[in-house]
Amino acid sequence: MRLGETSVSPSILPLTASTVLDVDAIKAAVSTSASGAIYAGAALNGATVTAGVSTPAPSGLVGVAQYPIAVAASNAGSYVVNSTVIFTGTRDGKTATSTATVTSADGNLTYVGNNPLDTCTGITVGAQANTSGAWTFGYTDVACPRRGGCDEPFRMLRPTSTGNVVIVDGSGRSVTVPVVSGGPDELIDIYRVKFSSTSTTVTTLNLYE
Image 1: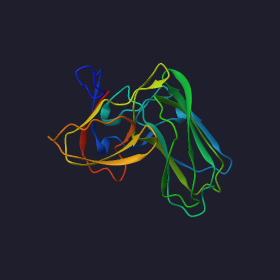
Image 2 (image 1 turned 30 degrees about the vertical axis):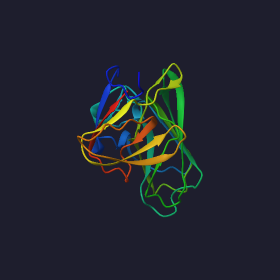
Image 3 (image 1 turned 135 degrees about the vertical axis):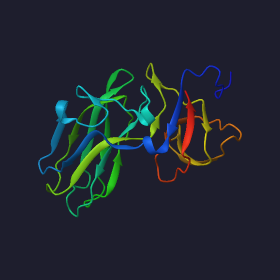
Image 4 (image 1 turned 180 degrees about the horizontal axis):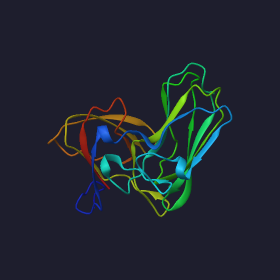
């Protein structure tokens, strides 16, 4: 059986670029705090939250892991470089965390967590310089499934529009893949799809688990 064999694929994920990135899926805008902050329970008020648990829903799909993001609004000097935003939740049925690290004092950047999550139940934000900045918290990208503690790379990417897709392979290397709707199938062994990145120009595609 080939890796790219779709006849045994347990799930097909039809994705649309404009609905993979959701900047406030976990929590709506909140001011920065000079003493740090923890958000959980009712404080998680994003569109994907039910009873204090945020579940990623790229393009309306369920059961799909995504990378949590902290979006820092533009405001000079409001953020502390090397401070962290730690997302707590689950991955493969186990407690997991994903950490994003601040790299600019001025905001206007999106910080992506280093691990994907199946759910998010809390956010711990390090102290910032003042209360004049603002955060929103959501999701980007799509991670391959993890079952029994092992990542299972997607079997196939099939474009349903023409353009470029940015992927990250097993070595962590980003690769831009030109794809053509109706063209030959693209067989790829990857750990995630950076479908919402600025370099991705494809509008829609199917991912085969």
